[in-house]
Amino acid sequence: MKPWILLGAAGIPGSTGELRLYQRDAEHAIRILGVSGDLMNSRLHGSEDALGELACVRLAGRPAPRLLIGGLGMGFTLAAALKGLASDAEVIVAELIPAVVEWNRGPLGIHAGHPLQDPRVTVREEDVAGIIQREANAFDAILLDVDNGPEGLTREENNWLYSNAGLSACFRALRPEGILAVWSAGPKPVFTERLRQQGFAVEEQQVRAHRGRKGARHNIWLARRGA
Image 1 (cartoon, rainbow, N blue to C red):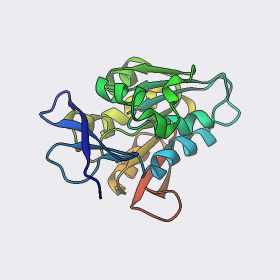
Image 2 (image 1 turned 180 degrees about the vertical axis):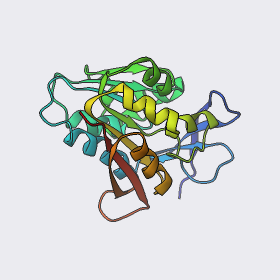
Image 3 (image 1 turned 180 degrees about the horizontal axis):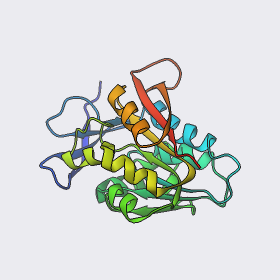
């Protein structure tokens, strides 16, 4: 088997950690320096696809929906969301690490079909938490694929998003009947209860990392703000 080739590296703001982009033949992986395994892999994105698909199904029929996606990753959630949205939609992607945006405009773009080129998309190179705190009653859906889900891995500051304060801010940032969709590496019952405490009606689904029946099971919460 061919060895992995290092294509790029980027520091993680607010952390001593470092993201690294690797390539092996047509496959790409993003890893955290010093942490075993892939943070993301271009072959295993079934649950990222599902995050975008499941959220947008619940927006069917809404005129000019406005979405906020926290965490660009390899672009799979964005691409899946765009497929489920009409031409009048607006999608804002918040990505804290500029290199991740650069990688998606470069070697990673082919995997998800270059979704950053879609005219409905605007990229903001900032922490999604700041947008959520600033904009009230602004989004029909907020999709969070930040860190490893409610259990942070890359930076401690990400934990705020999944706290009571962060979820309350998400509730305020959503429009009536808006959807908060959250990706996680695994289930976390305390987080489900936390969503309900903040006033969300909660669905929970487990999806495979790989399309079909392969790969690890990941968790997606679909939390609806009431009218």
